[in-house]
Image (tube, rainbow, N blue to C red; front, side, top):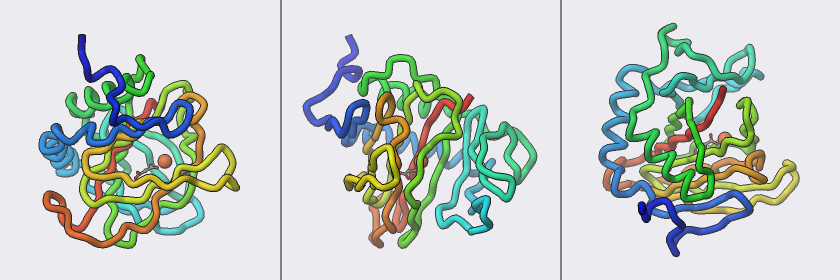
Length: 212
Ligand code: SIN
Ligand code: FE2
């Protein structure tokens, strides 16, 4: 029996279908960062424009069969990195494994991620409240893994007007949301400045999803 697949008493139920798994990825953080570094060497971080023409603060890249992109034509997933016109780097097996285990811990036994968005926040960078709805199958959850500086994550309701709860996401934390929480609005407050012992003045977030 694999104890990792069952809730620990440190796991926090945030809402139906939403779990914060503090420190879930801590032991794997060094290997994760190495894998992310290899992805970013092939598909560097870049700032995207919203369909309305605004430059997004958070810099992004992807690995997996599909990558999330935004430009004047809209938000979507695509197989090619628009910067190189080549396929996104494949998703490192250890990242997929970790995300699948986090999903299982949160009660989603059949998570099959095909897309991993890599977000890089510098001090002051924020991500405004939004829903993740560019995916085909909302029965598949979202798994987010945080590295580097702590962030205040806003976890809202199913309408934009619902007052969001605030969660601190620290280095090594995983957050899973799916089922009745899959379409909750969420965002990130401006990143507070600081110096993380491993990552310095930044936060890296990996968001794994089933897009297709
Ligand atoms: C996202 O909503 O895509 C990213 C959330 C985060 O950075 O924690
Ligand atoms: Fe999101």
